[in-house]
Image (spheres, rainbow, N blue to C red):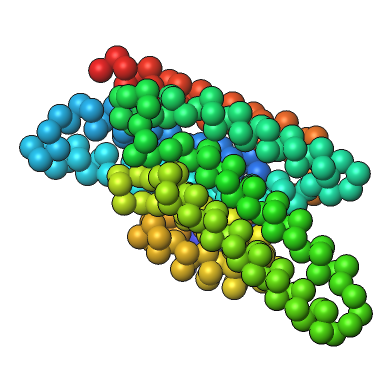
Length: 283
């Protein structure tokens, strides 16, 4: 190897080291953009490709494969959005905590209601389709469950000093928290929140991710392993989205700045559904 070749290899290695050093992870905006792109893939499949296939039993294998791949890609957005929700909720602290919680609930509730009809039209061509509810309701239900669980946890710190009282009250709190979690899963399951292709329980999976990210986030490896196992609900496909969560950048922005950022992502999500519903109606 000549001197010039050695110099070129050394320069390439240094360039790669600089790039790795400058990469600080995916911030919330990049994570949100990636999740919206993945969601758009699923909407493209259900609103454009699948309707054009007609009878799926006689559809071309190539077109059917493309539709399934795009649909599977949209499932990978589930852990990303779940992480963003938990990160957003962690910013509800200080004197504006209650206002932030109510603002977040109201924002997600409005987004879920507004986007329900476009979601149904884009997926089934009908204005009302009860076989699958808008995944935005999964975000709303998960947020409600996590807020209730957070509200129950301070009760354990207000216990009496008596050990028996601590034990009995702690057991009641654990039972109550378990009931809340089970109610959340039942809500997702019974009303078909986020169900895709009739088999992927997106709402149940989203709540699973939310619980893992909320309560195991202090231990990265345990969190990722638990989230990967939770991906079994989605046949392991959503677990690929955990790669983006793993390479995240933990931010400490203000609540107002995060609200504006997440509001923009919500608006883009509604626009994607609206465009796809218009395309579906035109077919």
